[in-house]
Image (cartoon, helix red, strand yellow):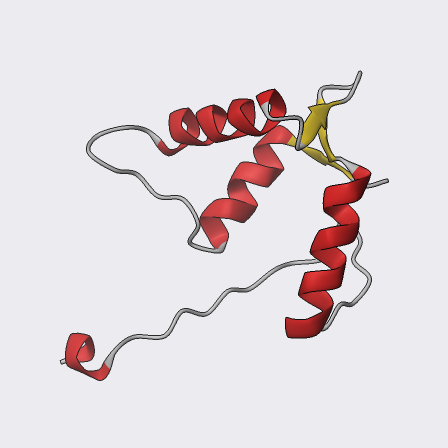
Length: 93
């Protein structure tokens, strides 16, 4: 099982461009709503240490789907992530 801290998950979402501030609503407020929705839909659960854990079936599905598109390397707490987003040539000028 892989547990992740609530705040770390939010930072990962932000780093990957999955969540951003909209219409004056703070990113953390939106992220908390998303996380609570995922908990209510039984996709993730909160552990007794207040971390978050993806249910096994969804974890296996994510590994299966992700394995087709992305390579996987073991990570530690010292691993840094980098996300690069392309810019359309028209937007760059």
